[in-house]
Image (cartoon, rainbow, N blue to C red; front, side):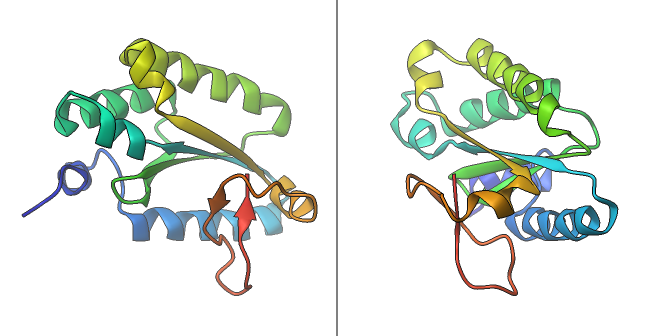
Length: 157
């Protein structure tokens, strides 16, 4: 039986975990060559999907609509952890422009959900290459799975 997440993948609304994580690795390598930075926005939607009284299909449809209307066509959206963590990879975003991208996504999410539902969505924002500089003083609040498969360790947000 297909999950709701699988139906979003099949309908090309969100990319699969494997594809999304591969795109992060490719973008990181491109950034190392070109020097252009990118922004990763992670949405922890697990609590929303588990604890809301509304059907998952409706919640995920609202999530995908909010993301599609607040991001560019070239931004990659997909599951980072299926049924739990959605990622948005925004290419060529300078650190100074990150706040406006994040504010736009937050605004669309707030308008798509009730205040109680919106509180259940946790957002983590990582700007690359600044990730590398933050590792030494990282807070252990939320573990984000390794973005560099050739190296051991984890990134924190």
